[in-house]
Image (cartoon, rainbow, N blue to C red; front, side, top):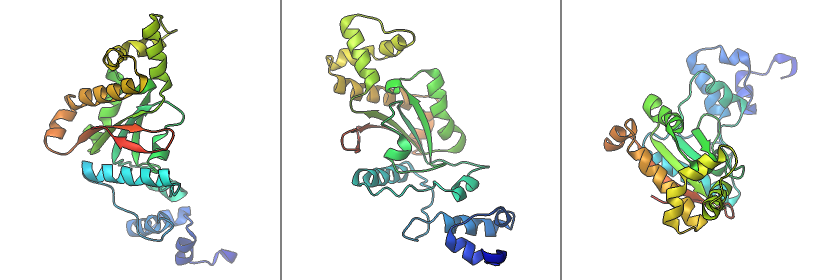
Length: 239
């Protein structure tokens, strides 16, 4: 940029975004994003997945990169931040546990503006959480909801121990244990089975949601359950 004489083509090639470029025409703005958002291979960015199956395929591909150690970290630059500053259009809702080892944006190798993320201990659910999950599909037409359980969930383990020993957890933690009571009984006390059963219970509950059910019936939305292996990084679909 010596003497400020570098042209727009040079800026695009360098992957820089400056305020002056963003105040140009809409076409110019689109050109800036298309160039700066390119993956390392130089190909044009993929369009937003429009169907539930396309959204799941995109998540699966991102997870494969995560497992293989070849994550591309898309949509994590200044250009993407600028693009989504005024409007968002995520292609999936991921409802997962609060566990620090299960960050959906990393697990699925996505970036800014790609996902709505809802997180609670053991992906337990209540009306407030349901409302948060509803927002994307109901307001923006987000085509996919993924309920993501995971290996060695601390919240589920604590709940199982509490229920087994008939001892209440402190504070509101006991509410979590209560919400997992049914899954505990049906799992026979096996924590990993309990995690999977609870994940499927949440999927079943969301499928019956009054805002989700009509969209599911029309093929515009899918609610699926999945399981994340902390050991391998792999996400497998449960239903």
